[in-house]
Length: 445
Ligand code: SAH
Ligand code: SF4
Ligand code: F3S
Image 1 (spheres, rainbow, N blue to C red):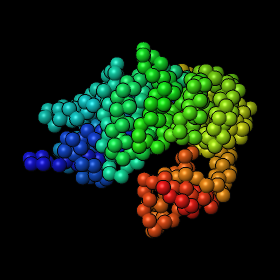
Image 2: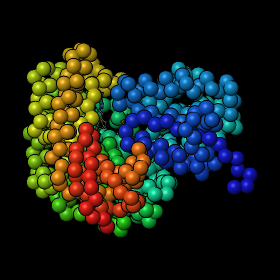
Image 3: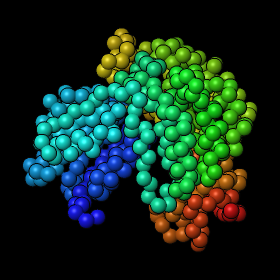
């Protein structure tokens, strides 16, 4: 473009899929401003760090990152450094007080105004801050531009959370639950399908309560039914679901909707009812397991995954044993497990009986060893079966190796002289590896 100088953007992202999706939007916005993405921060005119504060460890990352990037401003006066996402929302102005030279702090509702903030810094050299919560979140309607050949897209359908689980900072940093109008969600997915997207992952902190607070809006199963009708979309996934809001209608959707994948991320958090109560989760393990069973009845191949917190305040050896028993019963494909991390402002920080660090560490080790065994067992069960995989593209190690995913989202590697990217093929699973499968093509198309 005549007169347009290309500038370099270095973008670093921590945290959940919603942050990954937000970063895709940021990249798109700055693409329109004449920025191109670079992988070497030394070349950057603009550095953006999109942060996560769900546990202390990811939160700390931003400070070591700023330790790397802020000194670069001494050699490069054009360099602008911005921090966004959940840590930015949590810390606000205190982040700029603590990290001198930090140009921009933008909160989780301020993505759409970020380009204007950068321009303002370039014009005035003054630091910028925007951590206001909006009642409707404008950035939800930004449609990321995907590279040619991209098959999978995230689509945020709601943001924020009203649940206030006692350990969790998310309601404080993402704000109150807000559902994006279904019309704009459907319009986006239609557009994506036209551009070659075949799989959508609907995102929200609690997708099950989508639309419930907006008069006249579709509920989540109704939204899924609408997405299921969109020509070109072959696979629909969603995350995250709160077990207490998992409705019969949603269970039925797994029978009725042919593009809905048999995969369910259903965070349990603990296998002890006493601990669930203290977490404020609003369900018992019996209620949870009943929902799992009913989903398995209507959809026997369905794969479950979960999040688990190990060493929540008051967790006894017996409570921990109940968590272990529960993963044996549910037989999850994957569990994202972390030690409990006290978060400022949440109720659980002030719970008296905090579990010792060494105990948390040891329980986590035991837990993860067992879950690894369950994961391997589940993978081995697929040996000899045939699976419909959507081919994502060439394997990282190249050669004649390709990668696809099963409907349950397992990775399958296979060899082929032909490029079947974007196609659905039938493969026979020949071998289970630690975290993936190997297969042979049976049929394509
Ligand atoms: N809305 C989702 C979870 C979002 S946060 C849900 O309700 O399931 C993602 C995960 O981070 C949680 O499921 C929880 O397992 C973990 N997490 C949240 N706060 C935590 C804390 N203080 N310590 C350890 N893990 C935590
Ligand atoms: Fe956090 Fe609970 Fe809300 Fe999930 S439902 S985001 S764990 S407060
Ligand atoms: Fe982290 Fe914020 Fe997601 S705290 S897990 S990036 S909602």
